[in-house]
Image 1: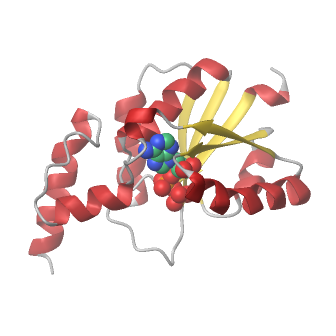
Image 2: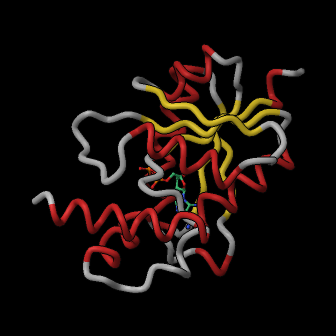
Length: 166
Ligand code: ADP
């Protein structure tokens, strides 16, 4: 397997949305192996635990060729090196995403020799983000159009238990 056929798609995935899933499905057709990596950031408070996010992503990506779900605490370029991946994959929704991603892509290439590949997001999914999902759900809004169907009840349940434990 050539080094370039292994890609890493990192993110928070809190929770995984239809936008993320679209990128993962497309990656599975482009690369021999795609690692979907949940970056563990102890300073960022997440709705779902790392293990819950791993399980959720596994459940909706089952059967996609070459897709493996991992979590990692550290630099994405170190994960890439450790797994022989030459490509870091990011989804682009708009100019804002590009402005944010460009300097990071330059730094990752300079520091790690890792190329970033941007996949333009599907036109119909550009307004979806995990942040909007969490915000909508916390006010009882309808989140069904943002998420893979199996994820909807998990988010609704999590919001309910989080509220009850406050
Ligand atoms: P991060 O906190 O690293 O931005 P996210 O979980 O928000 O992590 O996103 C992970 C990746 O998925 C990023 O490259 C992001 O641009 C991409 N992404 C997020 N939402 C969408 C979407 N609706 N369509 C396509 N790509 C998306």
